[in-house]
Image (cartoon, rainbow, N blue to C red; front, side):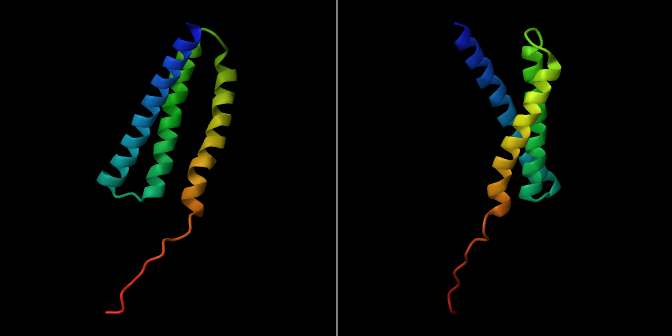
Length: 100
């Protein structure tokens, strides 16, 4: 039962983070005309902040918030580089044009 509760909280926090990420990205690109990479960076930072807040709120009764904050920020760096590196290092797309 303990695993199911933890899995439920993990899924809930992850869903909230995804919704925040997608919403911030869509808002920045649609309303403010920001580029996709810039919008993605700000969306990721907003989602990471919200998931951190949710995680600290859930775990505050069981562990020190300083330890969970350091652990979560370490995950930010690792996952942020993993998510953004394919975007930054992707080669430009090849376009094919017709001769006429």
